[in-house]
Image (cartoon, rainbow, N blue to C red):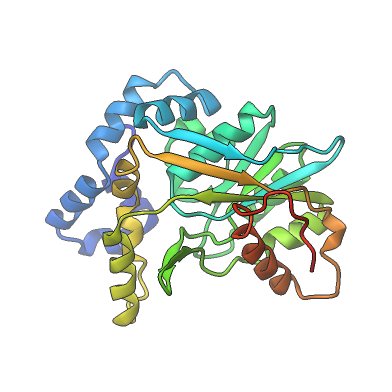
Length: 274
């Protein structure tokens, strides 16, 4: 097997693995579509990087539409910053769009995704549950490289808030890195939504004050529901890195850009003015 949930859980949390009943692990394999994913990985085992991503999008029958031009400034290093509505297939589609624009990319992602060897070359592992000196160094190496960075500042996929599908708080890391490494930012809006089940589960978890991100376990299942769907991208105009000055805190800048991204579908040609 390419993906082995037993092994993943055992390595990430040995104590949890010992306590989990076997039927729970079997259920997790089912909602993670382990068998189908492994069949796909075997079928496309010789493909690497962007070629593998394209094969996956083709397998899902995903249609990608774009509005606004992906304007690439000459001699500028970039960060493509986007909202994160779908928790999986949107990231693959973003890789595809960026690669077709001729960008050599790298994408900071949850370190769990490093279990898929075919796409390791595109990813920088990030561990959300603790600071690992090696991973911090790898992230800085990525930002200091000549590659274009793809980035989901929320870290988690969108939730339903007051009837709208929107990201949670955007973390300030991308603002700090843009300024530190003199990288201009291209804002990107991605249109999409998960199932009502996903959002209801997130809401129920919040009501009962359950800290464990239970709904994340269903993201592969949600990805399977995106078959033959259309994902729409809207690209904004590049924002120079030195816009993010001391007028506001980095957290405020991140929040302002988050709000701005949601206005792009109505007016992709607007300028980010604060």
